[in-house]
Image 1 (cartoon, rainbow, N blue to C red):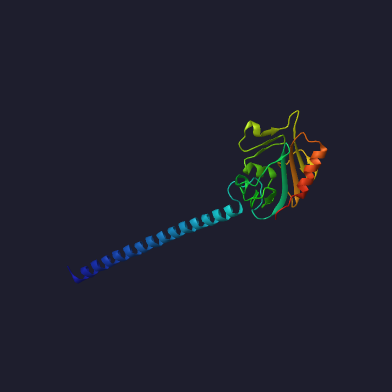
Image 2: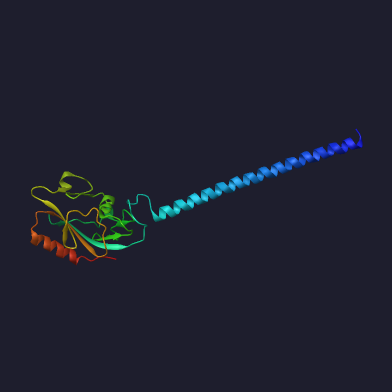
Length: 202
């Protein structure tokens, strides 16, 4: 083999090695770019998920505003056959960040987002509330109180009688009475006076 042939062979070998090296670098750069893209997508998805869940946690009420955009307080009194329903036990406390009772207090409702309806509060604490019925969480027949020929379920917002409170969005310092029984106006007035005397904790 002549000198020229050896030089040509050496050049071809160097050219082949150089091409392989360039291809490896290209593949490595492509791999890095793909990995960077995947990391960016994961980071974006994580950020989107975190910010979304912070502003609108899972099980958020339909139509509710951003959590924390409002903070309103309302006093609630529920009397069934004259007996006060107690919302202070743990089973009724802070079941949703949007609207709840808190601090072992069963009189003050806290609403932490705009456009959260009162019916959603009762849903979260497993109390059935319709325009005609108030049903305890256990749904037992003797804990189901519906309007009939003898007794009625009544609602009052700031002393004004209303047909329903489920779709009502409470305002600061509202006072809401839910009363079941056959009370006359004197008895209702006494319950409204009691409601007015309840401390609204803020």
